[in-house]
Length: 76
Image 1 (cartoon, helix red, strand yellow):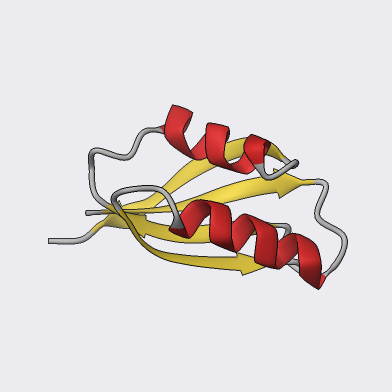
Image 2: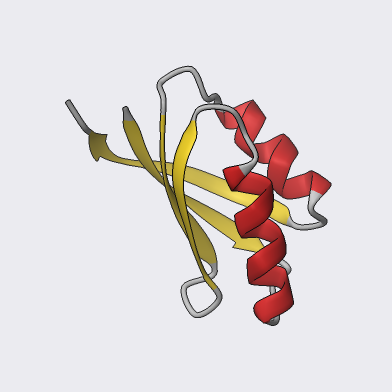
């Protein structure tokens, strides 16, 4: 399992948060997605099979920009 922080640009309201949350949760292998408007991003827990490209595609398909991905540590 991996835990990562995604910096996301373009979110401005709770509708944005819901759209990004749903896009990330719909990705196969994503177990948790917690999106924060205040912090401008999302913390996810996912299988190691989920790639940065997968995350980027989901965020961009929802209409937002994925600026960076930072690993927050691995889970056993």
